[in-house]
Length: 89
View 1: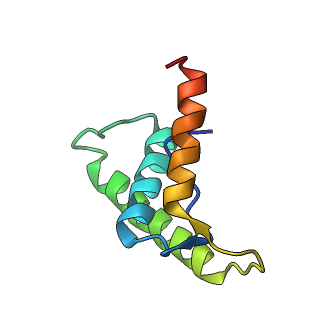
View 2: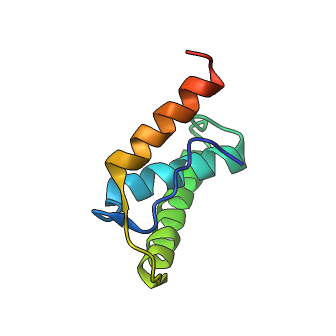
Protein backbone atom coordinates (compact mmCIF):
# COMPACT_ATOMS: atom_id res chain seq x y z
CA UNK A 1 0.00 0.00 0.00
CA UNK A 2 2.26 2.79 1.21
CA UNK A 3 5.99 2.33 1.59
CA UNK A 4 6.19 5.10 4.19
CA UNK A 5 4.13 3.14 6.70
CA UNK A 6 6.57 0.98 8.65
CA UNK A 7 5.96 -2.11 10.75
CA UNK A 8 5.74 -1.07 14.39
CA UNK A 9 5.02 -4.38 16.16
CA UNK A 10 7.55 -6.53 18.01
CA UNK A 11 10.46 -4.11 18.21
CA UNK A 12 12.69 -3.42 21.16
CA UNK A 13 12.26 -0.70 22.28
CA UNK A 14 8.55 -0.48 21.50
CA UNK A 15 7.13 1.97 19.00
CA UNK A 16 6.80 5.49 20.36
CA UNK A 17 3.64 7.58 20.23
CA UNK A 18 5.35 9.72 17.57
CA UNK A 19 5.96 6.67 15.36
CA UNK A 20 2.36 5.54 15.70
CA UNK A 21 1.11 9.04 14.88
CA UNK A 22 3.44 9.32 11.86
CA UNK A 23 2.16 6.00 10.49
CA UNK A 24 -1.41 7.15 11.11
CA UNK A 25 -0.78 10.41 9.29
CA UNK A 26 0.61 8.51 6.28
CA UNK A 27 -2.40 6.21 6.29
CA UNK A 28 -4.89 9.10 6.38
CA UNK A 29 -2.94 10.91 3.64
CA UNK A 30 -3.12 7.80 1.49
CA UNK A 31 -6.84 7.29 2.05
CA UNK A 32 -7.79 10.92 1.55
CA UNK A 33 -5.43 11.68 -1.31
CA UNK A 34 -4.32 14.86 0.48
CA UNK A 35 -0.77 15.60 1.59
CA UNK A 36 -2.15 18.56 3.50
CA UNK A 37 -5.90 19.12 3.62
CA UNK A 38 -7.69 22.34 2.75
CA UNK A 39 -8.94 24.55 5.58
CA UNK A 40 -12.42 23.10 5.05
CA UNK A 41 -11.12 19.54 5.58
CA UNK A 42 -8.45 20.25 8.19
CA UNK A 43 -10.59 19.37 11.22
CA UNK A 44 -11.85 16.09 9.74
CA UNK A 45 -8.30 15.19 8.63
CA UNK A 46 -6.82 15.86 12.09
CA UNK A 47 -9.60 13.93 13.81
CA UNK A 48 -9.02 10.98 11.47
CA UNK A 49 -5.30 10.97 12.28
CA UNK A 50 -6.05 10.93 16.02
CA UNK A 51 -8.63 8.15 15.68
CA UNK A 52 -6.38 6.01 13.48
CA UNK A 53 -3.48 6.53 15.91
CA UNK A 54 -5.69 5.44 18.83
CA UNK A 55 -6.84 2.34 16.94
CA UNK A 56 -3.27 1.52 15.90
CA UNK A 57 -1.99 1.86 19.47
CA UNK A 58 -4.83 -0.34 20.73
CA UNK A 59 -3.91 -2.95 18.13
CA UNK A 60 -0.20 -2.84 19.00
CA UNK A 61 -1.00 -3.15 22.71
CA UNK A 62 -3.23 -6.19 22.17
CA UNK A 63 -1.01 -8.21 19.80
CA UNK A 64 0.95 -11.15 21.24
CA UNK A 65 3.90 -13.07 19.83
CA UNK A 66 6.33 -15.74 20.91
CA UNK A 67 9.02 -14.40 18.57
CA UNK A 68 11.99 -12.51 19.90
CA UNK A 69 11.69 -8.73 19.52
CA UNK A 70 13.44 -7.36 16.45
CA UNK A 71 16.35 -4.98 16.81
CA UNK A 72 15.72 -1.60 15.19
CA UNK A 73 19.35 -1.11 14.18
CA UNK A 74 19.50 -4.47 12.39
CA UNK A 75 16.23 -3.74 10.56
CA UNK A 76 17.51 -0.29 9.51
CA UNK A 77 20.67 -1.86 8.10
CA UNK A 78 18.64 -4.48 6.21
CA UNK A 79 16.51 -1.69 4.73
CA UNK A 80 19.64 0.19 3.63
CA UNK A 81 20.93 -2.93 1.87
CA UNK A 82 17.56 -3.47 0.14
CA UNK A 83 17.46 0.17 -0.97
CA UNK A 84 21.03 0.02 -2.27
CA UNK A 85 20.12 -3.00 -4.39
CA UNK A 86 16.87 -1.43 -5.50
CA UNK A 87 18.40 1.86 -6.58
CA UNK A 88 21.75 0.40 -7.78
CA UNK A 89 23.93 2.44 -5.44
